[in-house]
Image 1 (cartoon, rainbow, N blue to C red):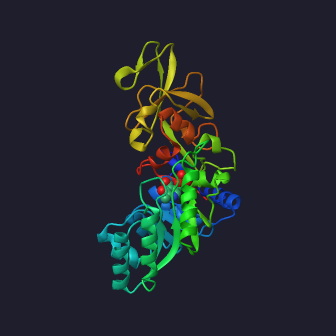
Image 2 (cartoon, helix red, strand yellow):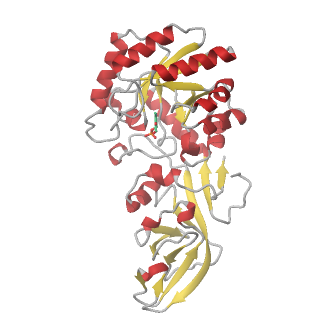
Image 3 (cartoon, rainbow, N blue to C red):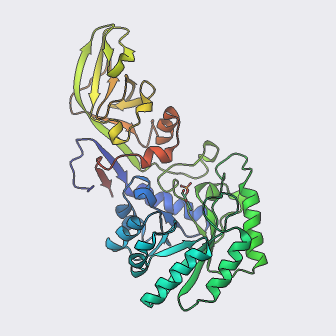
Length: 368
Ligand SMILES: Cc1ncc(COP(=O)(O)O)c(C=O)c1O
């Protein structure tokens, strides 16, 4: 994936300045620095390029896997890289050697880190995760208190940088859980008189839903960086500019007689004589097959219906009455009329899955 590929073929155009602008506005809205989630290849936008673009603006980066963490270090990222999930024991040595920080949810995880830190003679930076209701990772408050004590016993090997939790439903119009979670989190911090540089809880929903009181010392907005609000009720609170535009070229145009079928299983038939354009993008590129006969795309600025089954490498559009030629670039989604949110609602999913699902074979082309 490089920025030097020609942009007349299938590609995802990534506007790095849009990501920087979103970061500035999210940080200004909360008045807090950003720990930028760039896991899943920066939600499909390309983690290394996004990290390089954001490094001057953010406090650090959050990733989900060992290879994501190491790739950032290999690319020369020096700011904090926080691994959000427990590492495999076999990758611990490399991670500690690279100065990666860890989220800790249990005494067992802590023991592995303490041992590796001692072996390497390094101080490992950790963020204690308190499970307040998501029940995915994190220690329940009582167990978290024991982890906290244990960290305090190993100050030569461990540095407690943060205490964090993760919210269940901060994007909902009337979150049932987030308020309860934040009460538990605050109670934990008070009861144990936690003194730590960074307390953090806010995903994009927690940032935009200011009334929740989730901003603390550091914010972790992911989807917001890439230009989307996590729920319709949070849209428009601040300007978020979608950063990715997915495009594919028209590779064939044909006139079709009324009654003729289109694509596999003949799920669509021409009602009248019409024109059909074939576009080089399909479900293997991450444009879901579930969009078959449901979506629209932009051809030279005009919205046209996608027709018949989306294929592995191609899809079809009805372009009756339009000037369309082979080589014209079709926009499947991006800033403007058709957003990833719109595509997600047609596909019965969310913008996260659409963006992270854009396949590795789709070159990312960067707009600085
Ligand atoms: C621990 C953690 N923090 C923050 C985020 C960012 O969430 P969002 O993209 O909803 O802002 C995620 C993403 O799932 C996460 O797992």
